[in-house]
Length: 297
Image 1 (cartoon, rainbow, N blue to C red):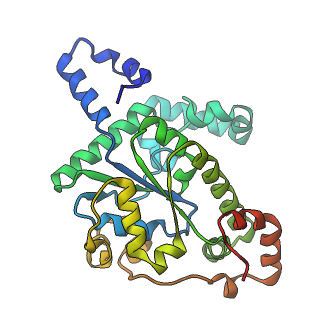
Image 2 (image 1 turned 90 degrees about the horizontal axis):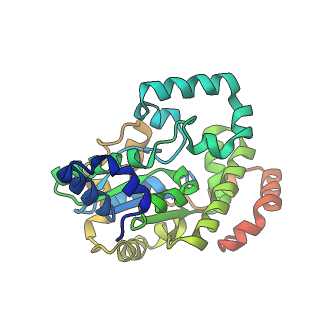
């Protein structure tokens, strides 16, 4: 794989240090052992993370890194103290007006909490080294909202594998509504995230998994994922709940989720959404449901 020009520029400062340059070139080129799990939240991304992380070669990062997002919570500490202070001051002074006026500049530029490409590369390099200490050579990262940043993932790591989860929009909306209490935001998130996924599917070789298929026939789906990621399927992926994954997660909610056996939650929307909400969802997301072969039965 030829090194992109931006990395040649990024590494120019090492040109007088051949050993250091050789080292950085090697780890940038080796970033083909990354698996990213994404998709609209509440679509089964944690379940799939647990299954893949039970593989003997895969090290699952035990939290949602948000490393590709413009997030103060996830990436604020990765910025230099000067840049962090400037961004904080800028957003306090201008807030949403600044974001609307300079959306692309703010989202990924200096006046944002977005990491630089080199910072992201270094982040995963460190985790690959940690994986090596655990006798593993593949990283699995799970952040649902990275479904909106697939283009940047593939730009930085063109050889990476991206596995996206899709689930019945009514069930997702019901699940998010139960946790957040807002039907409209839940519905709009499902629409927004999955429309983005469809656009990225046109540009990149993604592997899309339907939550329902993962529940009905998990072994088949895992074998297909392993084939896509070019790794051998392992039986222990089916007994993921017996792996010590629950002790890894920082959030208690995730610790509970990763140690649960497969639970069929299909059709939960029937007891969680009102008839008027179902009608509203049909009017706003009916066409998108058809694209993914979902019905309102």
